[in-house]
Amino acid sequence: MKKGLFITFEGGDGSGKSTQIRLLKQNLEKTDREVLLTREPGGTEISEKIREIILDRNNTEMDNMTEALLYAAARAQLVSQVIRPALEAGKIVICDRFVDSSIAYQSYGRNLGDSISIINSFAVGDCMPDITILLKLSPEEANRRISGREQDRIELASDDFHHKVYEGYLELERKYPNRIVGIEATGTIESIAENIMGRVKELLGTVE
Ligand code: TYD
Image (cartoon, rainbow, N blue to C red; front, side, top):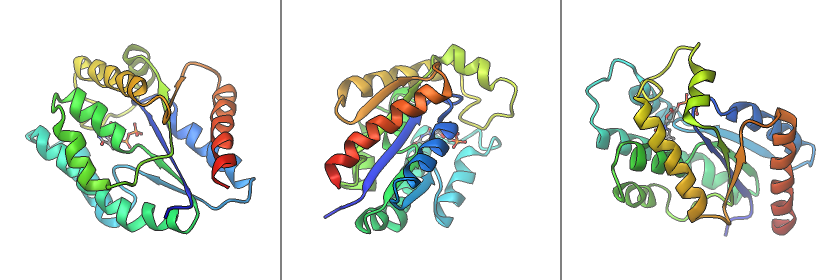
């Protein structure tokens, strides 16, 4: 029986996810709960090795299904080695990206359809987030924000791909309104952080 709280963050590249994750972690630590922060793809030695393969700009020949299976493999390892044990120990786990990224990027972005949720149900079993914060930013605005920095293999994909990813996220938000909290990423850092903390506190009230 899990006792912890599982929070995931989602959003397109450039949506300000990292900043908000850092602020939520700081805010939650003030509540005296133990907080574990991890990221996808990665978070374990094996998963970080898989991450290098996936994001390597030289791997231009990678098949879309190979990519999807590698994300799921990295995730399976992270769930069994880190996330599940932490939740069982009563910790709050914050994960930067999770299954919804695969639905948005591989199912919608790469047109791999229902296979992605099936693969991922094997990878995570019943270990799904209690709440998912989706930072929403249009692909055009995201492009403006990230254009100055060096981009990995996924970020370098076409505009059409990034539009499909965005649509995928909006579809997920409609499909899982009880779990996914969509927040416009164009607000101020402080207002977004407050909004997120408010939602998480509501939930902490119900699990404590
Ligand atoms: P990362 O540098 O962690 O990006 P970000 O800071 O935006 O989270 O790289 C992860 C990339 O992998 C990102 O472009 C999204 C993509 N991704 C998928 O395509 N599928 C997935 O299942 C996951 C977890 C990430």
